[in-house]
Length: 258
Image 1 (cartoon, rainbow, N blue to C red):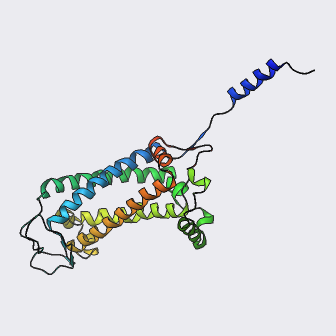
Image 2 (image 1 turned 90 degrees about the vertical axis):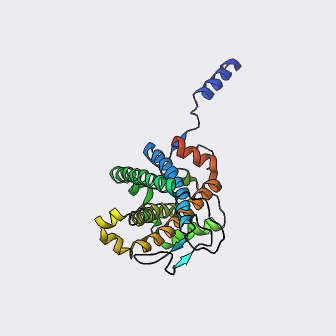
Image 3 (image 1 turned 180 degrees about the horizontal axis):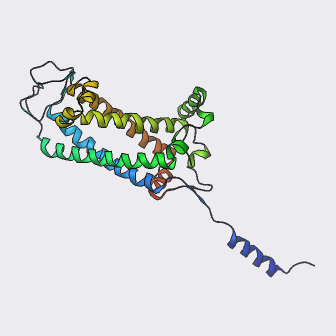
């Protein structure tokens, strides 16, 4: 016997009501999101204050000592903020050395403490092993070259990348977390006379305080290039979805393009 039309309409309405809504894939833990934004703010402060410190003496040396009476390893062709530094320009930049040194020091400690919290949690929770260490099938040069080729072809990201990192992202994050940032922090500490007297072996390992300053400069540029590439890839792969993931912890909704 055929069902009345009214019954069929009710059943269709019930099916629509109880149908599962679009789900969201968990993407980032709360601690990852909090430390990410704190580190981003600290790094921005370090970039601004670091530039102010560079223009106070835009000459770089190699070894333990360096001053205006010595030939620099290289120089940045900008006017200095001190008239005692020969730059070839007939004017000096405004001297902001005081507040910039103070804020640079404070921002550096914020970054160090944030990194320690993230590092301890990352090892204890298995975050590095599960989310950053390349998976077994990606631990081959062929897998890396395949992903590079996809980037060069500007191919859209795989569906799996809405909830995990690809091999190039993992390698880049590992290099930044365990190589670039620790070296940047150590070379920065090597510029401190108190650190130099407490742990002279580390400073000597860099070739002296002026060598550490030069290395610190190049490491900072490497981090800046990573930041530019990172923001660019976020924009290319889906800015709204990626930003939402790092703010709310949720990835793409089902059926939504990452």
